[in-house]
Length: 456
Image (cartoon, rainbow, N blue to C red; front, side, top):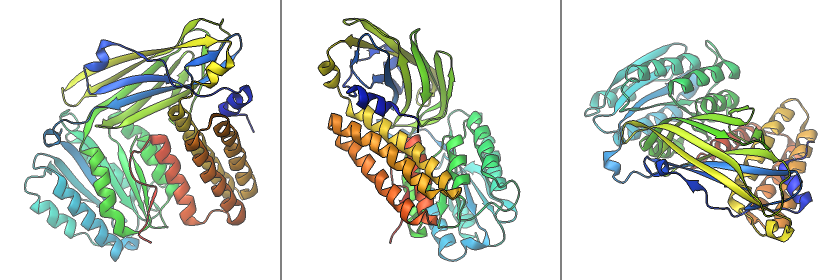
């Protein structure tokens, strides 16, 4: 298996560092988002090819007065197929009513329900007193098949009615317990839908309920649209999930976020870890749909650095973020850059550990390893899946021991335990869904909740 950056660092006996203060430009303080560049070490070894991790963080300011939050343009898409009958549909309606209760009269709401066909029960409209919307929610009855693609597409159509009004933050929340079996139904088709909605600035949050939904389809739809994803084994937990999700959706402070990172000659970006983006020569570009107050979203880039003489300081990266500031209703740009110092003293490098960057990297490396493990188990190669998970965890464990990073050690312990379970029993339905959701949540830096909500 290809050696990871952590294996390179452990072999070189280098650590991840506490960092030089980034050079913050004035524009960083003018909007709702601050950009920060961190390296995995304050000092790098001189006179040798180096590898490093660059972390680009976007910190969204909390709303000072939540009662003055920007309004939301929310479409709720509910699976009402036959498998949702009984407690599931009742809990879904309860959660929807609770969500409605948190909206203000000026928010825009639409409700789409689908079975074998798709029906718009509430066209996009201001909530007002909410009574008519509540009646529509209570009227939902389970029946028929699962036209998931059509349901999400219809929800998007409702959101688009007010998409040009930049005052409103758009979002779709999808809840389903089943396979998509009417209309487009493959993960690739739903991923393409998510990509198209991302370009429009419409994130889709997916809530997979029970053990029969297609987690590959649901997570890819959410990831490609830059939305959140949940696996909820017990329908009784739906109100709690909706409350958590609305806490995010009702606090959006930035939209249409474009991040560009430029590396000077001699610093070559190798790959993004976790997030999807584009590496083009000396530049890395990626997009995020929305940022909520109090959130940190970040990207991790592995880089190779050409040899530098001891005592020199060198620019490693500079970054630019452009976004729509929801509060000021204007386009804002923020800039930051990061230098590194080079030394021939290994102890200086070893003593500059930034455990947070190190741990973020470890979690994302293991999230990718979990995705590969699921694919291998699907291909009936559970022994190989366990072997690769163990090997990745062992590399991180060696690094954690070298740098005394207990947080990374915890990541490796969890992954080693997952490898043991896979080798002994493969992946049952619940475990597969949990791994998929955990991986997606890590890569999206989902800031609340666990992947599998269960009352058991």
